Length: 385
Image (tube, rainbow, N blue to C red):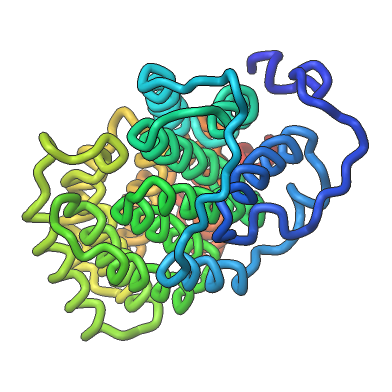
């Protein structure tokens, strides 16, 4: 690992003077732009310092609901006072966007822990000062959008690192910055990411509310990906709640909006939503409903197209392993589980490790099957690292 990741805050060039951090730093969606920019800066600084009042704590369901309501109904207050002598240009914004794409790619390829510290430092050192600079309305909107995307990417890295309370702070600030950018589509996209996290944490009712908030807040068709993802997350939540009829309706809605997508004209932040992601979500949804026949073609498609992104390999292989167990095929289940374990071993992704841990727990009941024993031994070695 690069030595930079283990450096102290002092070595990273960030002030470590004693500071008091409110426990709600980043959890409040402020109507005030000035307060929001201070919050984003404080959040990044306290994160790098690993301030216990910020980086630890419990996931707040109340903060999520409050942020949703504020996103939907609160008007922003443009009370920012720019700092003289710091002119921001479109070139600066383009640099932020390009750097964010790089961090996003590293997250998808190597896991959230691989470059999270670098992304936070970039936010603190390069983006926050520009947010306080001078710029015209067009550059300002583009800058706020770029900052929102970076906060969402950092939030996702943090989520992948299993630091859920900290991740939601970045998601909430991404949501607020999207409002300032005048980007309802991206704000709705952030809400779907929050729904994804809630579902992962076993909170399907909360995931459903977030998905529905996303669908309500962006009804346009220019970025059809937003409606697709919102409907698919609603389907996953309904399936977890055992509501098959509503699940089917949500899947049909996802299919309709997915058919409207045009990858050539969509924004970069939505480019990941293709056939592979759609198949993975649809297959997982049917599997949650214990419908292996409907799940199989989607999961097979997702696994075939997952090459190149190890995290996708982990999840698609794990779903196929569970599908094979439903079929009573221990040998095939073990083969898929081994694929998941091998892919997770090359990632700095605690979520991926948890997938293997969950398979290990599920398959321990089948330990009498010889193929399963081989997987259990492999998983034990991985989890012990």
